[in-house]
Amino acid sequence: MIRHIAFDFDGTIADSVDFCLLVFELVLQKHMGENAPDREMIYRCFGMNEPGVIRYFIGREVPEAEEDFYRLHRELHLQMCPDVFPGCRKLLDFLQDRNIPVSILTGRSETTCQISLEVLKLKEYFTDFQYGSPLKNDKSAQLRNLMEKYALNADELLYIGDAVSDAEACRAAGVKCLSAAWAKSARIAELEKINPGLVFRSVDDMIGYLENI
Image 1 (cartoon, rainbow, N blue to C red):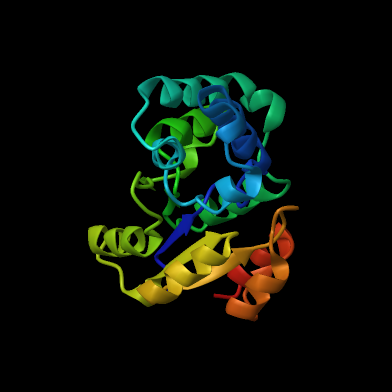
Image 2: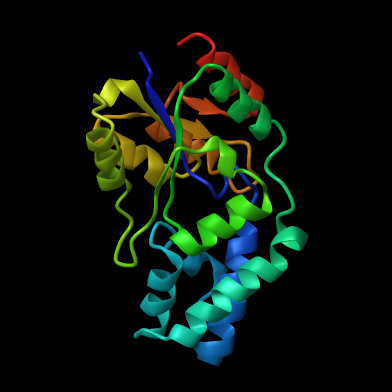
């Protein structure tokens, strides 16, 4: 029996991957100039929170760069990411109607996660928040924290995320991952390879699966 479901945010609830990459680019170009990394290099660091990514590339803590990120994230949000993926509110309403507690488990910092939940009017859906580390992508530890906090067995928790690393983290924690592959950034072939049979190309397909668990 599933007693709790945790969601990733970027590329799962909202089409925000390109938005986040753009903000990183603007901030890192401002503070690093021609030495700033390209998008693929930045994407590979997703899983660390925003201060961690910025510190990784600049090589030290730069509070001004972190504040620039938070400011631009709020200023550009409605322009770059005005709503959730089509169907995601339906999915969240479906889980709410079934009285299944839902958490956010993300690599993001608390600051940007809460900005997005505020802008997109999503706070009412979530009972818990597991935020990322500035040091590494460690979602398997976040999943274990969630299980310990709510006294969940591994088979009582589901994680919904779009990245290959999400499926890998779930495997390490013994938790089933439902791979969200409805974003244009989804790496479907890689997801199918690591998480066969549990890759969903539409929100409605995932709702159909959840109706039968």
